Image 1 (cartoon, rainbow, N blue to C red):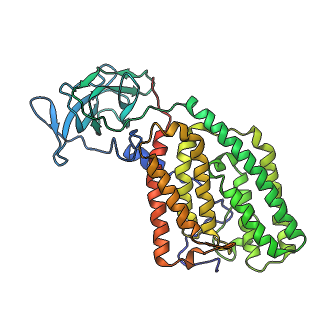
Image 2 (image 1 turned 30 degrees about the horizontal axis):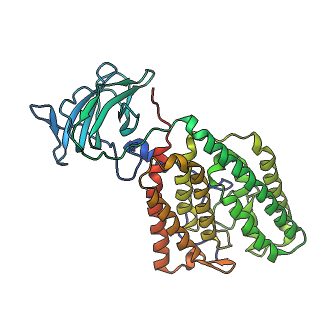
Image 3 (image 1 turned 60 degrees about the vertical axis):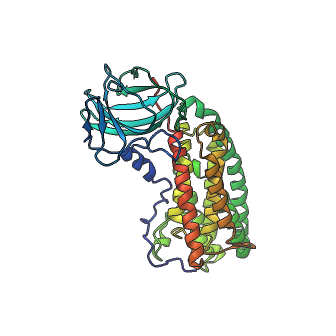
Length: 420
């Protein structure tokens, strides 16, 4: 398989592969992804604040057909304007009457569950919050910069109407135990990785390049399963799994190192002698990472986001073969990335089960994607991306797209929020 396929956007020479683009996180900041913590609710979005208000204080949107209610946001009047509570899907048009930016949550004051959220509401601006409300008690909570949270009056929706999606907020302390569990799991995998790179180095040292090609893949997949830890790895990631532009000259860059440097040599006819130094450098980098890992600390607040980012990067780099330097094993890497997503979700599951009503759909999406990838493994080899039949490639791309949608609420659920 050619290492320089047409249509590939090259990376800058000597640059590590960008693991976490934060494209989803940036989009969340713009669209204000709602807490609703499930894929069924988008709580807030950009709006121009244009509404029509009737004599009873209810504003009618010009096009959405939903009931609109104008709500004032400030430290002194948080939640003022909601005087005629009703069940069902509706829009609260939040107007920040204060001089500082504010976050606004719609909560159950008894349980703390959040039904809607708008972040970064600038002074003098109005944005809509769309929620589905059932019978129960609700109150707006205004969290302005550099000020304590202020809760507005409690409003009760009567009757026996089922409530819409909601979830209890997650704090930093909730995330510490699963983070420590995952960090311990990564430490064990780094031990496996060191064993694998040691074997690969031994293969190359004795000139057995057939064995090296086999052992290269097994060691590389160990590394690819640890995707949620890459940010904590720091500069070690470039030394272990860095990439360069997909051109013949770029692979000669002296800073090109790690698994992909060895991959290029193993699948492009380089001699064992030329690969001994890269193999020794890879093995040394892995052992340094292993020895220093007990002193590293992962960020608990990033745990939920990592599950989404792993799959996003697999879609961006593996399903396009942008990181294929000759082995044709991108689908094997994508499969390892899928394992990595499961590995980060497992310690979070105890927090996720009561907060994500769509968790069964996420599990089904993970299983469907796994099966689609496993179908491309034939004995000890994997179908290269450019040799996938069109329908199968479409199916895998669709499965990854669906999985990304299912994982987006997980990132929202585990965003650490202010509650006071």
